[in-house]
Length: 112
Image 1: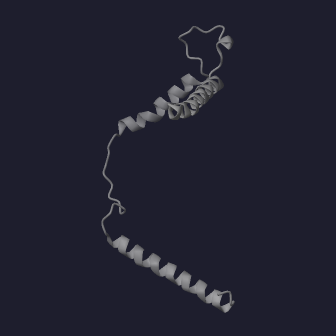
Image 2: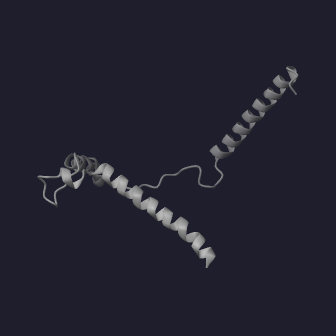
Image 3: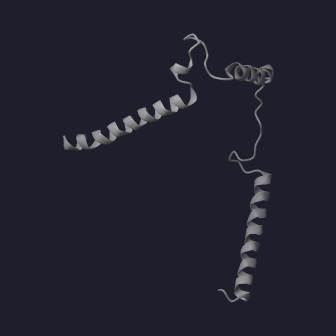
């Protein structure tokens, strides 16, 4: 029983924090009821909502017109290709040369 009470307080505090945050966030983006004197209850009260709906509709029109979904062939899907082998040896060679050059510089400066 004491173990259940130990988990109850943090749960209640977390729920209260979520409710408080939701209340504060909700009032930050939509004007309060007192500022909507001339509007009916079912009207949209967000500023620019008609323009944003029109913009989203206009932006989505080309996407709906060309809805092809081609499958692209890409290199990084797990199989070994020519570009994978060339990239592997090129990168390992370059990194080895950088490491060897760093070693030569550090030994010449007598740091190691």
